[in-house]
Length: 119
Image (cartoon, one colour):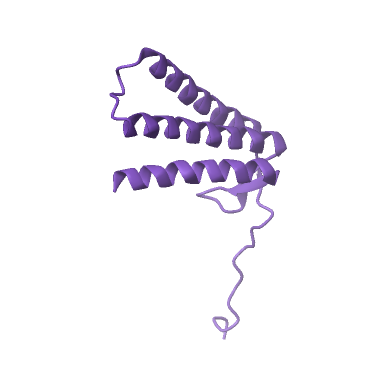
């Protein structure tokens, strides 16, 4: 069950990264105030896509290592490579959110009054 879930997460992050790379800019609605959104421009979207692809590569590397039956702590070069991938992923996520701007959500519609409730 855990291998299936791990494979799903790796595939989902890889597909999401590839989709974002081709998409361009988008708005991410704020969780607590739907009238606000984080606007990811083209550069911020590419940084976010690169972070997701990097995360997918790190997950695939880890799953391949575990499928071989090799202990995770045995190879120092693999540990360093994996650390660099994860650090790069965190750095790219951070850069994407720093580059993104908080603005008004263009898709937000204020809740209107119900016509039947006023009668």
